Every structure is written in C-alpha cells, then in structure tokens.
Image (cartoon, rainbow, N blue to C red; front, top):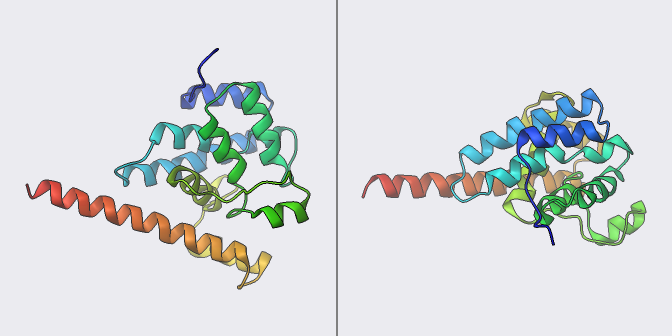
Length: 184
C-alpha cells in the first residue's frame, strides 16, 4: 500500500492545474499560503509542510463547485490523489470558521463536524478568512465582512474571533518559549 503524502508547494500547483483550477483560485490559494506561512514562522510547534500544502489545496474543490460543497469536492479529489489524511481533514474543515454537525445537516452537507480543531486546521481556516480574493485583508476588514454577511452575534463571527485568539495564544507561547531558551 502506497503511503499517504504531503506534497510540496510546486506539486500542489501541479495538482491544482491538473484539476483545472482557475487562475483566480490559484492566486487566492497562493495568498492564503503566504498568510499561513507568516503564522507558521511565528509558531514553535507546527507542521509547516502540512499547513503549506493544505493552504495551497484548500480550494481545489472550486474546480468542480463554487458553493460550500467545494470542501467536499476537494476531499474527493485529494483522496483520489492519495494525500495525507490530515491534509484532507484541513480541506474539509476550512469552510467559514467551522460548521457544526447540526449546521452541516441544515446546509445539506454530509453529516459530520466541520469545525477546525488542530492548530494546522485553524491556521489554514483563519488564513483563508484573511484573504479577500487574491489579496490579503486586515482582520478588521474580514471581521466587518463577516458581520455584514452573518450578523454581529453569528457563530461565524464568534468562530473568527476564537480563531484569532487561538493563533495569538500559540504565537505568544512560542515567543515565551523562545525568550526562555535564549536566557539559558
């Protein structure tokens, strides 16, 4: 049995092109990857290779579908490519700021929990939310977009704020670990 793998950034581009991802989708994936790489550079204990590959491939399902179902299409494509299951999980869970099993049922998605939980899942989802098409947008701009789309008290806005808090906390922990190491 062939081992599941995490492709390089170049191999991800090849996969995106193989499935006819549009240039807009590819440009968006490159921006998300750039944002995610910046977070990875500030975090001590993170699988950067996994985050980069997932950032590059998170929207591969948009080559088949531009609705929320693009995550499911992406999972199917990446399973066909025999890629690492952790990467596939990130692609499945990157939509919005996470979707509960109950919300998934209402949306017609396969019954499952689509909430990002691992640091890698959260970084890709959050980075995607900080990308406005093919450009990076500020946290405030992204937050205001979510508020105008879903309302100030929506689970999407709360999820976005939780993602920001989580990432800031692990960056701070890394900074504190780095300070301790340099004082030894």
